[in-house]
Amino acid sequence: MASVIARRNSLLDKIGKATQRHNLHNPLIAQINEWEDMMIEKIKIVADNTRQQVSQLVNSKRTKLSDDFKRFSQELANLRETENFIEADLKQMKYKLNEFNHELKHITKPVLVELHTELSNQIVWNQLIYVEEKSNHTCIHWKPLVDSE
Image (tube, rainbow, N blue to C red; front, side):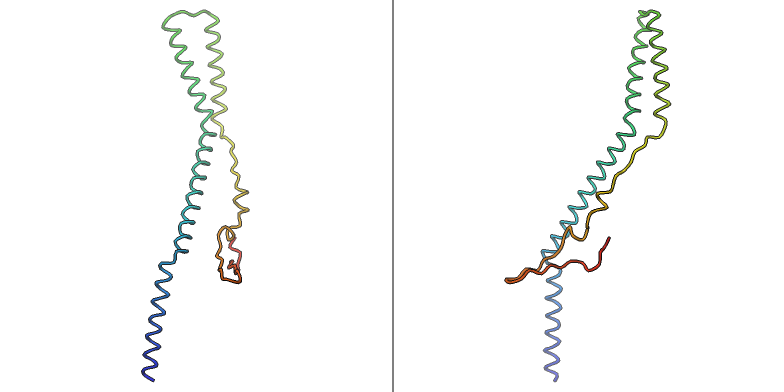
């Protein structure tokens, strides 16, 4: 009996080591990890691009107004330095100042931007990647039993 128990214990130890070694070095686990990293990176890129789009939408009118006002200020400074202007020039400058004031009132209001995530809500996450056991005669698909959404 002692020899049977000793052989059983030895076999149990070998099974444990083989299972542990197989799980640690399974190339499929490495592939899953690579896929996960790739998906996370793609999501980060899309999120960064979307942040840039929001920033551009929010800041584009402010940037344009600022650039236009700098050009106006330079033009006004040139007219003042050269003292080469007529009444029509002054009238045009006053008109532009009124336009800038009007634009300033519009850009200080919040910009309405809507984020669309409908397509991402339609992703069937548990079907993006799945395991398939292959043998010589049949193909068995392992899919989650519970919907993870």
